[in-house]
Length: 510
RNA sequence: GCACCGUUCGUCUAUCGGUUAGGACUUCAGGUUUUCAUCCUGGCAAGAGGAGUUCGAUUCUCCUACGGUGUACCA
Image (cartoon, rainbow, N blue to C red; front, side, top):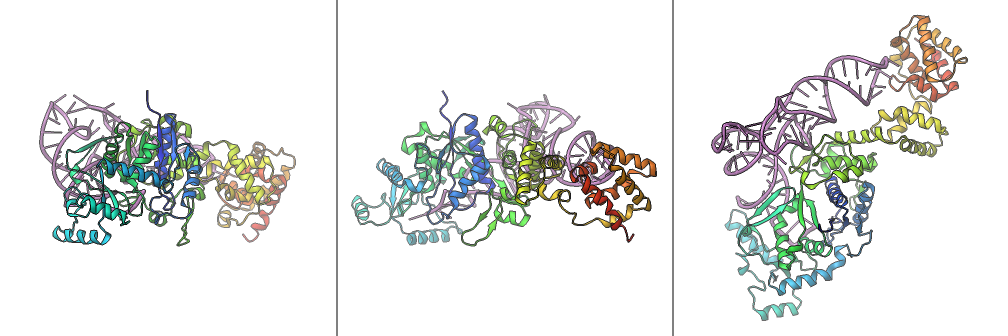
């Protein structure tokens, strides 16, 4: 029997969620859902100095916008709470105590100053590289391994600040299996006696993470590559607690890199290259500086998620457009790419465009409808439907709908006089006047309007390319756009005639 | 420095030893469209370098180079 799949997304609330973080959450979510498992949100706020006001709410809002909905977690309930690490202080103390009692951890009494001096000294002797606090150096430091029992008891009872460190001894390589990378081996001699409990009584990431994953019955740890190097410490912790049999599997995701040059994607790259790196807009509480998010740029969450999912993963076929359900169905950790992926904004836009092309027309219509009513435009439902239908394939973002055909529901802002002049001839006026007079007796339908147009083309011995631009500019002001006859339909008979009549005024000076 | 991870078209990627190395984005050239967008057809474009193993390596091993991550009382 396979054990119940439970994954978690465990951000620290230090700021907005960037696309790398969202993708991590997405993969953990997809994997859980694929296996009928649970996905939880845990807030890792063990560093009070770095927690940012509003970041927690922001993270939750981002996940909801993306459709990555936790089954449990901060803001979502669940029976393994509390899900905020700052609310679990007592738990970490209790488990730290166990480690001290079984000899896997020890107290460290070195002050910041002592540590600083020690590091400086060792760096001087060693080409600027300072020693690590580990099995070979700890005997020279002030800790419960070097101090007598009485001294330790004394320090403790006098409330002298201390940290608790994991005792890591030299030995055979530490080997573990990463779902994405395969077997990974670390030299144990390179591992330091990492701090588990800070002197402020808060746990470090390592302790809190392991304890919580165990207590919350996490089956698969899916996180960024930056954690790969500390995984040996985490494994050692599972062993120290005697939890090795219940240890989750590990999957370390590749990073998202900047589009140009080297290195991981940062907020600065987005500013520099002109694309968002956050899911939602974020205003820094200190600098008051606001960064746009994908939501504000007009991205559809499904398209955004589809795009992110494909950044480092594919299902092995040539399929690129996935619905949320298809993503869940097809996802597998084994097919996650190992190498980092350079971010490509063009492709993100392409995904959005594809979504708009395939989405139900009513989705576009209801968006446009709300724009219409917000601006008191008074357009019929028929107009809205038809409008969305003819413009849907010419937009990248849904809000493009607002302006792209504005000439069909409000006055033409400016006429492309240059193009008009090029195609203009005296016959054009006769043609248009003739057309206007015949509209009255013609059925107002785009096919009929086109037939009439062709008929007159014959009569006046003119070509499409000669007359159409004139016609188009008179009706819409610009050279490009959807079928002129469809446009006339939306304009209505009266307005069409009015605009065509106006041609005479437009060309008076020619 | 040390530890660890990585390296296929400009970009995202497919390939589980034998392929004309495939697809998508971008771009270019055609076609469709009176126009623009869409759409269709086609083109350009890749296995970091070097040793092995093998009848045969993009694929396995090693070395080098390059890149990334870690090396905090940050996560």
